Every structure is written in structure tokens, then in C-alpha cells.
Length: 340
Image 1 (cartoon, helix red, strand yellow):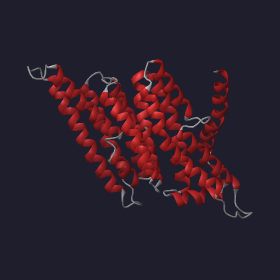
Image 2 (image 1 turned 180 degrees about the vertical axis):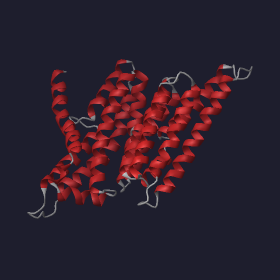
Image 3 (image 1 turned 45 degrees about the vertical axis):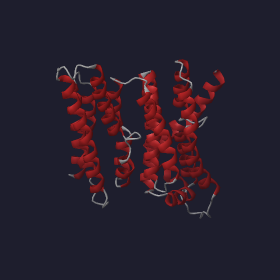
Image 4 (image 1 turned 180 degrees about the horizontal axis):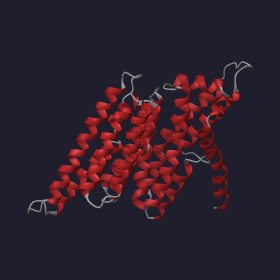
């Protein structure tokens, strides 16, 4: 019975996002966002965690406030008066809508709820919040976004916040949250250039996040010391963890570097030079965070007993297939480097 109701609400989460991004009116978009909010709330409840209810309440309050701002701004824009017909007033309401959608995404400087909410959730719900829940706000954000001072400030602040705050964390869920903030900034810059680049970036980011979330859920890893212990107990798990962490950091020749490379190339081709250079420099903070995690885990080793089962990690067929995609992608990226 428990699995059936979770499957029902999970299908509602997926369908509500599709309703929101396929709607022709602002009202339909807002309705899809509300359906999405109400359907994910039961999935956040977990009897094994005392913090799940707190996270669900925080998520509900933040999302409800953002939805209210979106609805009020839409009503003001649709109300044709002498005041709302002015261009400056309309731009203010569009700015409010964009800010509310960014709050739903959890991008800096509207990010304060994301690490705290993820800290009380299990890994599968964290995966849902980090990947699928970003789709609807980002697609709606494409409709009325352009390169301006506000967008540039959001992108740069997401890089700074994710790098500075992520380095100081010992919780793996908070590290994934700040990593998501960093990648949201990259996706925001990519969607300003071309929607196809954003889609390509999001698919690769979701693939890497699925890898890490499934592994951490399998080994029940929530803090850094648990991560190091699990990696030392299984050499193959150490390899998968290292590759996926380095890929999420976006350094070559791993899979995560490819969308960043394409994004920088697209920005430079459109005449933007200062923004990609700034993004690359600030992303080095996040790269340092991931290299510090992987380096300490690879260098540090403990004695392994002969009866340690090396192949227990491969019991999950789905996990093995997804990680094989990440590993095999290194070959294709190397070929792409040679071709260019």
C-alpha cells in the first residue's frame, strides 16, 4: 500500500511538470506548479527520519510564497490600467515573476531553503528535488528572460555562493545542494544562448546526479566520513565515486566538462567574453571542493580483508549501466578533443 501511494504521487509529480511546461497560458503554468507542489509533499514524508516533516514544511512555505508572487504578478500584468501599462511597471512585474521562479529553482541568491530542505530528505527524494523539480521553473524562465544586469548578477552570485559555502560542508546532501546551485548558474547562462544547449547540459547533469544519488543511497552515505569508509571497503565503488565526483566538478576529460565547454563556446561566439571568464574562475572553487573529496578518498586507504566482496556493487543492473555510460563517455570526449 505504501509503494502504491508513492507511485501515484510520483506519477502526479511527472504529469504536473508536463502540464506546466506545455500550457499556453500563465494560469495553466501556475496550475501545473501548484499540482507539482502538492504532489511532492507526501513523497517527502519519511517515518525513518525525524527531519523529513521539517523539510516538507520548509519546502511548502517557500514554494507557496513563490507561487503567490507569480500569481499576483500575473494578475497585475493582466489588469490593463494606466499604471500597469507603463513599460517600467511591466518590467518590474516580470522581474518579480523571474525572481519567484528562481526561488522555486533554488538558485542563488534565492537558495537559502535548498540545503536545509535536502538535509532532512532521503536520497531518492533529494534526487527528485535536484533534477526533475528544476525543469518546470527553468522552462517557464525561458519565456521572458534575456541577458541583463539581473541575470548576470544571479549567475555570478550562484558561482560565488556554491564555491564558498560548499567548501565548508561535511554533509554530502548539502554538498550536492551547493553543486546544484553552481550548475543552475551554468544552465541559466546556457538557456540565454540556446535552449538545445540547456537541454544537453541538464541531461548530463541529471545523469551524473543519478549516479551519485543511487550510490549514496545504496551505501547509506550522508556524511564525508561515511563516504571515505565506503570507498575504502570497495575498490570498484571508489572508482565510480571518483569518476562521478570529478565529472560533476566539470574538469576534462570527464563527462561534466562537455556541457561547460559547449556553453563557454556559445557565449564567446555571441560576443560575451567577461561572463564566461568570470564563471570559469569562480567555478574553480567548486572544483577544489570535489578534488579535495576525491583526493583524500583515493590517497587514504585501509586494510581490506580477503573476504571483502568486490562485486557486490554490481548487483544493481541499473546502477552499473548508468555508470558505464559515464565511463564510456570519456572516450567520446577524448575523440572530440582530437577532432577539434
